[in-house]
Picture 1: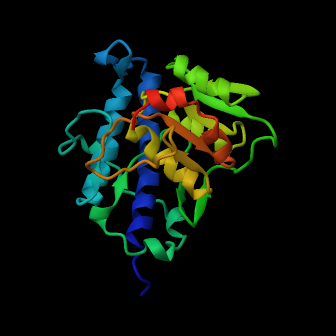
Picture 2: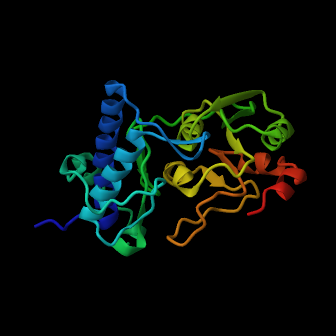
Length: 261
């Protein structure tokens, strides 16, 4: 009898299926027309019915299969008792075809954490690679910056200007910006602002690391994702697939002073 897959691969395989379930939930809410929008803390901090249902589905499905897993979600919602229709118990057999890198084969359930990105289902493991997306590098010698679409500021613009950007791409979502790097549409993700949180960068950073990219705060400090960490990325975000040192060296001292880790 073959050995059971390592915990990490079972977690990724379940996460893949749960993410696909979440996509279906979003599509169902969107097609229904009633987005159920509510204000969480103000007019610029909104929550939709899809946000609520997706988090309940993800957290409850993971908690049921991995009860010792640390799960931190964006929305303040209880997930112990939910409608069974929201539970996804399957796991991707495609993911389970791959062997776990030896250095991660002994990870225990209470040592792991989980997050999910909606849209295309992309998964990756460090030293194994990334699947569901085609890796491509940005044009050589071009400084193409991807940054915030809705939270621009003087700090953000000063930082981009200092990097001598040939082009600026403004899109929403940390995951979307990291995809711009992986697909070669941008050479750096620059966000000189405290606007995003750990659940925004966690899954995208894992994917970027799996293709040898780098994501840090604006000072070059790595992010931590343990259960007691501060949720706000108060010192912004800087990420690249390559040439990280060039962009890090261009961050103005005035920006570093304003954004305290």
